[in-house]
Image (spheres, rainbow, N blue to C red):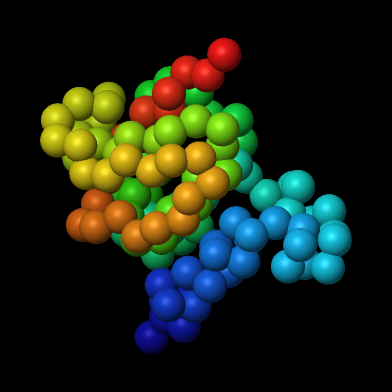
Length: 109
């Protein structure tokens, strides 16, 4: 039986998304990826400074934290094609269901 479950990971992602204020001014949050999600493989995945279209390793789903300056658009199919599952603005945290295969990050100036 595996001990790692989504309900244990979600609070960690939410805490990481809140930044140094919750962590007592620590710079630990600065080392965290800008975009994090828990995949269908029940593992956390992260990207630093993502741009354009990226594949969701592990089959994206569940908890998502977008600490980028860009809007993230989640697609059901690889290559940022097919049905849009969710659109998540900068700084937002949510659950994306049932899954996503790729994410497009709006290009910012």
